[in-house]
Length: 287
Image (cartoon, rainbow, N blue to C red; front, side):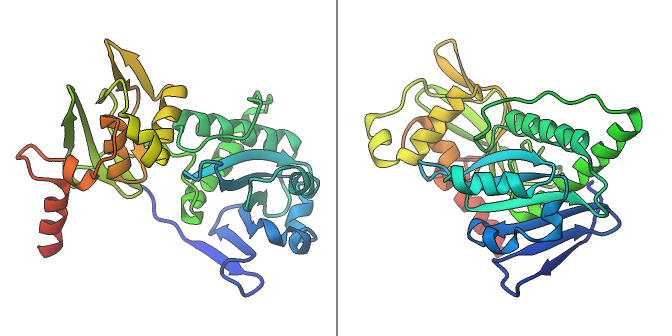
């Protein structure tokens, strides 16, 4: 069971969608969250004059979810100003610094490398980073401190709407039942989760999509192609198989990737008794 914690969110300009300063109680990590359009106004903030790590997020070119860039700066401000002029995709930024300015260059290089590695392993959001940095050598004490700082960051980010670093959650004992999706000689298993729908490792997907998928549900088609490209779907014995648990934004996207066509996930996913996800959801709502 995860440990509960509290966050303090200061809406610095009075606009809930504007500049927010987020702190975790009894922790040194402080996040500065703001939309791209506000950079000219917020760049003078003292937090952006400190050494830290930052995330840039914005829509992918195909419109299916976010694109992510992870960076570090000593200090952060010049790096953000450079990206403001040279990177078009991002619409919001999140910078992390330590209360009291305790981070140094090696610290943030370590955090940057760890975040990129986590995002690549989770394969939930494509990275705009071209290089994979190596972790710098830290003392045993510094490394331990940075792992704690990283853990605090990873706890804060989902609250801020960023799930790029999370692996698919394991199904809990009292969670939704494991469901199956079958068709065209393949079978997949999965379950509902707080962030969408998780397809389990070892599940099968059809080798080819129907022609209309690319034309009429291009977003789902692109998700499938991306999973093939990054190795989440691997071809074996004439079928694709999931190499890891993978969290989709909806059961319909999960079913479409498995079946290679447009699909209503609330109908395609069924439990062992043949009840559809739709029927299970309706029964739960009535109970």
